[in-house]
Image (cartoon, rainbow, N blue to C red; front, side):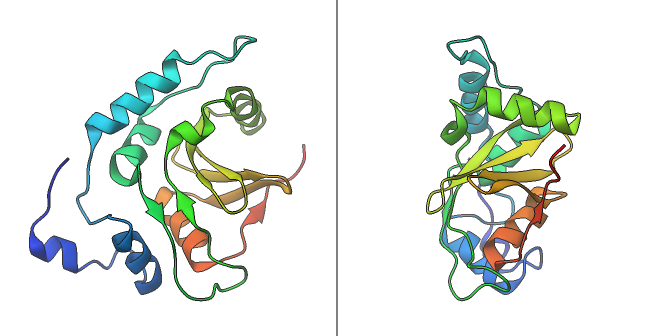
Length: 168
């Protein structure tokens, strides 16, 4: 894993204070990059085949997100803006057995989608598409969380109400 200098670990304007504090508390810092772990996850997802033959799509946007944020267990503090901030477990293997569901979502969106992690408290699956857009899938529907991983993390960690995807 790449390491950062002390100044890199103490100052960042990339995320607002609440999100930055939650991410740093989980072990993230600017420049964090564990490509070896990301490649392990990519290989594991590529090699997995569901009992009826569904496979995961794996693409650069996902591998990059896993390299920077993978493995983090993020617990935000304080109230959310519209809803409670989400506790996150950023591990794509949380969605290992969701290849069909993610494939269906990808077809509906016209892109490839693969797992990013989960919200353990709600059971929501987090997914990323080939253009780095992030989605949440839960018992209440499918949600658009942001155009980038950073935007999605901000939505989730600051308690901003996500946008529900329209049924098709």
